[in-house]
Image (cartoon, rainbow, N blue to C red; front, side, top):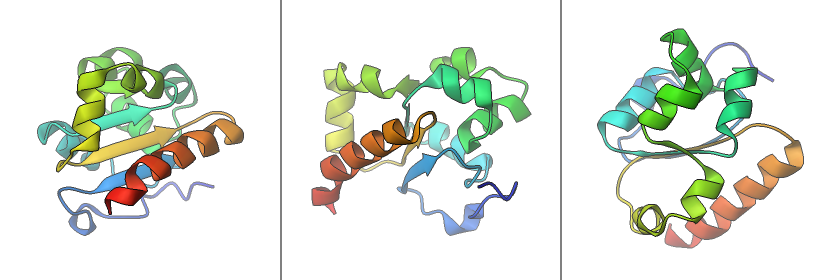
Length: 127
């Protein structure tokens, strides 16, 4: 459930942080600008659904700036999870990273959990 306020402030977010957001407005919208400036990774499970509901932090970043997640987000490097899995260069970037990344999921809870589980299994052993 959203409190309509981020759970974190920008000064609490370290430069190489990896976040996983699950349909709540928990991150400050400025976080995404920092991610893009750092050439970070922005992955979502369904960019169209996220834009339609407009409830999570990433979608709100775009709507608050009068932008479209489906168009401007794609131009900024936001990728659907399925696109990442079929892009060897992006998979390599994720597997060897030292930059910030944000993973967001919106939609059915079971799909959210599947995405979160795969991310955890992929990245967990690296930490």
